Length: 240
Image 1: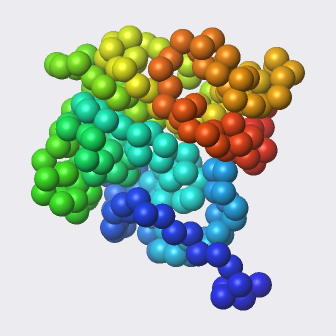
Image 2: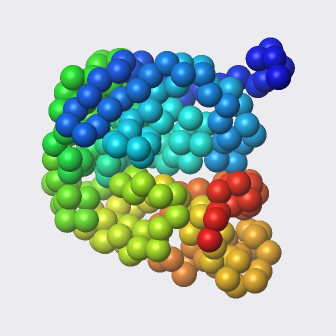
């Protein structure tokens, strides 16, 4: 299929510039043009993709799937925002760009990831007023405690999109931080799996009931098309 018949992926969110580098077992790879499915969007062509890998596993990449699966949290973040898991720094950078966000703390456990970011310095690519909001802390996401009340918690510390222990771990992070609002990677898969178990339609009422059951102040359910987004994401990515 000729490339001019493909849809190029585009987003109005900030996508940092990356360059190839290594830090311990981690490698940042750049340069391939790849056809990628979205999280809830269609397949599109990504030019000069960047990906963070360890061994044979890709932990994060600038693909439509990765961007769409985190953008709700970035767009709806407000106040003091804590990002659990550095990854490629994309979510923290975009949260810092939101006018409603006053401060961003990134909590990362792995010293090699921290060393990678010290060299890559994604946040230096931000406007000075956004970069000044960001601080990076080394710590365990399941035990880290803030020094001030947290408004928004964004959590992405997992490799598989689907995970059985995810909700319990997010509850621990939310309890430790006292965050008023939470968005965690893969929450749509959690909701879709529960809806399937209940045998109900994936509509606004079902989503609201499941969110109450999760006992987490989730970002996303207030969006009018959220049930439809969940359904599209689940059709593409829910495997169990």
